[in-house]
Length: 316
Image (cartoon, rainbow, N blue to C red):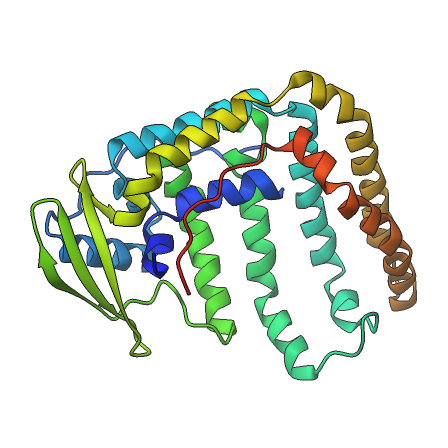
């Protein structure tokens, strides 16, 4: 599966990332009118164009109804399985990290810890800074950031608001990097099709040509590889969530909460730094505790957020 899979269905990939990585905004639940053409090449071109224009809701509209139901079901089930205190504090901690990093940006950019950075690299980081912080804060303010938000998760609302904002930040970041923007589409050409299958040729702005196989599922065109593995991926996700043991979470919770409290203290010290020297000392003093937290990550995974199955990712 090529880059198209990420463009069509990043909602699913994003959900899997968030569950394993880290209050909620008010999100509209009014479903937009269908605007995706029936022809496979026109459908994919429309999705790509709408997404590049910042319309995250098109991703939800591009999914078959049963896929939409699966995404909502898995997210809502996760909300009932995670430990709410651990999960919510974990996301709050990431939001706090973004706030402290934003406040101490100059100290972060100018620190000599880890070696001196080229001026060009610092300039790129500084230019990308608002989008980096905005990306993280968008996630930590979303419905994925609390157990309560997960329990009431609405994929359409999430795509309309959170994904649309993330797309904007992603486009900003792509412009500042040396990597091609995955949302930039050149042209889509139909090579062959039947009533339920299609082979499309995608030519990117840099001239790269990819051929994708698509299958029609419930009047929506999806990558064939994704269509063939969707049912098993969703079944595995549900099985993993159902297997989460409240007893195991309770057993690990004191250690996890202790780690979160320790990290909050580290952020407090970094936040309080008023000079570059104080900041460097605080950051250096935090290295050992952070390494300890990283070593405990396996234990935290069992209590803070469920391990999600791997979402199909594009081949290089």
